[in-house]
Length: 226
Image 1: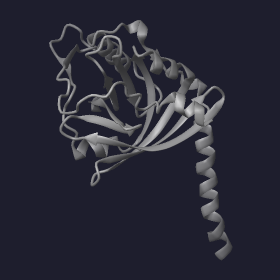
Image 2 (image 1 turned 180 degrees about the horizontal axis):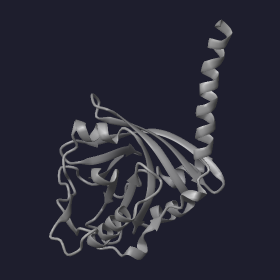
Image 3 (image 1 turned 90 degrees about the vertical axis):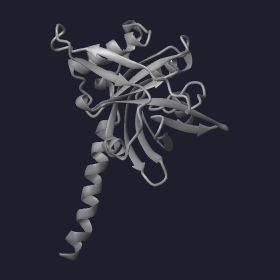
Image 4 (image 1 turned 120 degrees about the horizontal axis):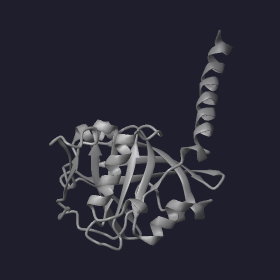
């Protein structure tokens, strides 16, 4: 079980090579309005925008891993092993840390993992310190769609990647198309995207049962005192 978790390498943050957060990638994506392609309106996605307290409060929620396109073979293979992932983010605004609790479906098993992530406000990056190396990924917020993306090594053609996370497991067509266009805009092909099939999830039902059990446990002492 532990080995499987190591192989997944924390699916939320499959950080690639170490980067210098002092030099964020200032890349702006302009995606034409999907509802009305002839319109001049566009969706501006800027990589490297600062992370504010408002952003962190918005991120404090349950999230579903929707899909990704990875060039790095290590993380591409890890994603193929991991069928589904949902997780909870709990930011600590005082310490600039985020507690991560995730549930991963690997084969027919549900694997639970908990760790902490760092974040760099000015550079708009998440980070993880492991094995003496701190690595980074750029946060891209899509509030309109209730989603966010993480961008990895976009300047490296062989290792670049883009991943998508949303507040609901059902991905709307518009959000799917936004992600597809973003993947193309950073120099990758739509065929490299692997979307998650949430019908294969093994953790959601277990979480529901645990929540119901917790509610029953809280009721029992109250009934005994009645």
